[in-house]
Length: 406
Image (cartoon, rainbow, N blue to C red; front, side, top):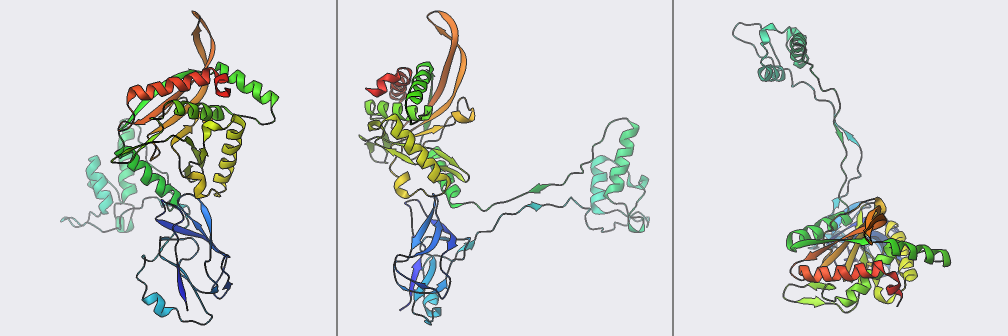
């Protein structure tokens, strides 16, 4: 008997999906466990396997189309079965909306309004509505303008020409727009929709406040150089920040927390979400038990996550369960910024670039390297003094990196 296959819910935040590809066509035999289609979710493009044997009798969502979770994705059954009655009786989710391919949509230059003649009582003066409007705005007497349109009708170019002529006589320059307005539009991806919804909820629900601290990175730079010279595994400054943050969170578990409405969750484990930029937005894979891992292991995981994210191959297990998030824009030359908290976390750390600046050490001005970090806090969970204490501990680890090896 024919059965409906519905749009699956492939992540906890997924409300709709887009069919990226079909691996079968109508009439093909399908075995349980075979990949039926690829579904673009709010986080990644994932393969969807059939749960039953049968023949693909109907495709409900074409390639490139978007539909809500539980919409009719396909119908599987025996060859020759009629699916009309099954579709007619379905009361599931609404029909999918096509996902239009974006393409350049140049807009034509403005043209004169349709030449509706305006005849005055004297019988002969004619002007288009647009010409009359421009003349009224600019204070130009239409009786003094010679029309170049059909039948001597005054059109826009005549009024603009008269305006330019009048202006030139007073030696004031006039600039007539001659460019073409253009734009393109793209259908919002599932990922971008989820980013917009979650961050808007966070920004306008959680009362954010921000704490910024400057960290002396001289020792961290020397330590990283030494490690990379003596090890096959190369580490980055971001790896050091992840490790230092994880260790600081172990000392300040109230920062490693989440607001749950009627209760606050204080996490004893440390799962660091590391924001990774991809073409369509931002993904946050999670380094689990980061405080227990070495710098090389953290570096290898983050690099692997970044590659998988760009290929849209991250799985739900890769991005779920963060207890704290780090967003680092230092590699793009950003010196300082604030980040929006990634729910359900209570805090997120924004990391800026390392800058070479004059600093005062032992009473003397010397060259130094500093990095600014900004902690965004949910004031329902974390107070200023608690956030400041956490940053002090983070600073101590990065300024004395040997402490991270103990």
